[in-house]
Image 1: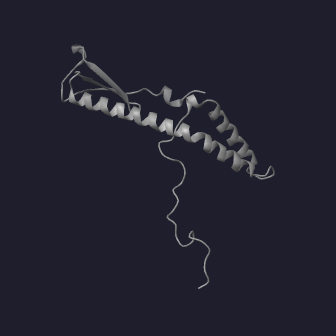
Image 2: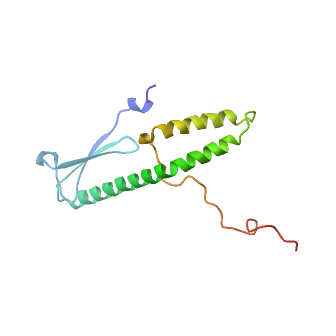
Image 3: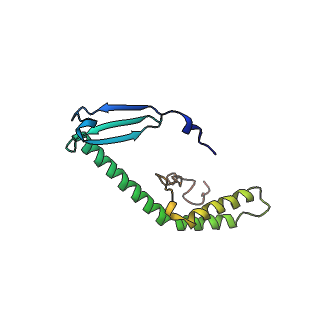
Length: 143
């Protein structure tokens, strides 16, 4: 299968850093980014450029955040996997959802078998529960 976007030409643009005015001929540092619109942006910096320093700090913080998310997700995965198996066991074989449950179990098992390729969500996928209200506080008392 071919990615239809792979055939689209990308646009390249070069932006001059306003802080350091570095360029390709000066042997400085080049940063390249690819935008959602597939535009390739090239910016040159000196090693002491404040803009480049901020970019490095943000990139390192992003890497640390992703590693932390991956670690949390990998720690939480076994319990979530067990909850899925418990819930799937409650689905009767003649239930219309049974084939979908089986496919989901197969997919999650494949992920469990190869957690090195684990893709963590950037937030907890469980819905937030509403604050306990009168309907959750216990049995209703006759009034």
